[in-house]
Amino acid sequence: MTVLSPSVLHRLKRTGLVTQIVIGLIAGIVLAWLAPDLAKSTAFIGKVFVSALKAVAPILVFVLVMASIANHKHGQETHIRPILFLYLLGTFAAAVVAVVASTLFPSSLVLVSHEIAVTAPGGIGEVLQNLMLSVVDNPVNALMNANFIGILAWAIGMGIAIRHAGETTRTVLGDLSNGVTVIVRVVICFAPLGIFGLVASTLATSGFSALLGYLHLLTVLIGCMLFVALVMNPLIVFWKLRRNPYPLVFTCLRESGITAFFTRSSAANIPVNLELSKRLGLHEDTYSVSIPLGATINMAGAAITITVLSLAAVHTLGIVVDVPTAVLLSLVAAICACGASGVAGGSLLLIPLACSLFGIPSEIAMQVVAVGFIIGVLQDSAETALNSSTDVLFTAAACLGEEEKLANKA
Image 1 (cartoon, rainbow, N blue to C red):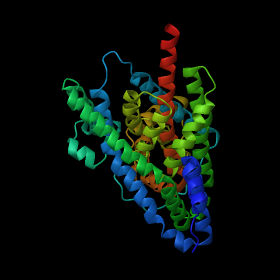
Image 2 (cartoon, one colour):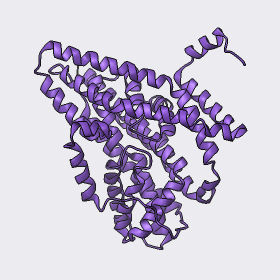
Image 3 (tube, rainbow, N blue to C red):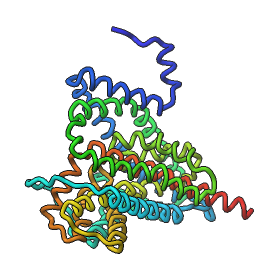
């Protein structure tokens, strides 16, 4: 049995986290290729890592947001409004890109006879109602179910109330926030091992043979996501910062997108994004609110998925789509995406809403959802990577842009 020498362990400790994750990724691929049966048993490692992230994220968001607001100094500038604008702009722009791509490269589906046993919302009104109910959710229930809209609402309310408390109380909150942050850093240190387990087990169990029949659809979906990540988002960041956006774009994709790709959950990637925001030197009062909020409403990847799959069903059924309807679909997709759950496959259940615009019955729409689950091995991973990395990207762009404006005025 080979034992790692102290020098090797020392080098591993000094290696950056992203490099360690890439090593875990390559090791997972090699294990799935050489020993698929053994690779399947590593699924437990990946599940433990994702479960740890999901467990720590709700309490981290609650404590961090509450402590940031409670200790916020009067007159200190935050940049939530410009971040919200970028979130909504980016989501709508992604839907428009998906409409254009689906028009230029239409996809056809082989609709199967069976339906998938899931329940989709009945309309946009229901999505908005669910969002409102999430805001007023019981705080204990919100923490247990990782309802980040409810967690944010209670954290903001408690933070505002505690601002008027004594200095000792606010100091305790700050210490509690630092303690939870330490736990998060420990969890993130195990990311390479978690990614190794996720990659090895996924490739050994699913493979990619089932995806070949949907290669064209996957190409359109992932092509749209790459275009948004590498062209559209940089354009938005350039408009905000007036300088080369790609160093920031690639940093966010490398350090946030990689982990989000394999965890397939925007909610689980919140601790990773908070840690990255801190390393980028962003203001804690801003990113402690914008990052968990982005995991709920900044859903460019979800808007692409909803639009492309809906238009694939439209093309398959021979329905003609005019320009006004396409624009309306973009708006609906953006609104629906804001209501998409921050868990794996959350956007797929909103496809029937978009399909209803074209009179497509629920029975057929749910078959499209089933197709989404089949290609979810890649689609949902790429979608989450785009969503989560954009949370940090737009937060950083807004913060840096507003700081430069203040500096120029001074």
